[in-house]
Length: 111
Image 1 (cartoon, rainbow, N blue to C red):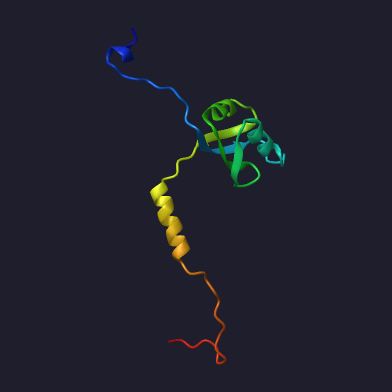
Image 2 (tube, one colour):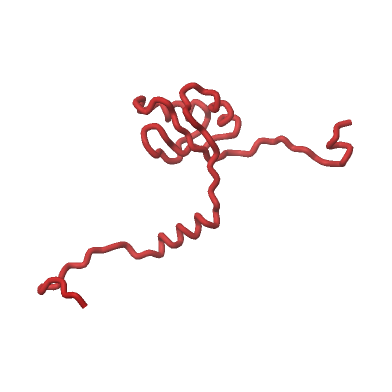
């Protein structure tokens, strides 16, 4: 009998679905390398930050597999606070766009 069974606990090791990860590759001069690496691991690029960095979406097993890959400098999970993100997005959408106003014929006059 296992310890969990003795206490009536249920242990689940089911892996979560997809996660968001920051991926940094070693060779930024290989333009398609990052994309091929991610697709080969069963993931997709969500946002490319530059030639060597991207936010990627993939399963936990793919993430674990890439952790030991020689082409990867760094890979780690990214957490997004949904409430904060929603608040920032709402504030951004509520802000009117900056529109340059033409000067009056007399030019700018201090008030």
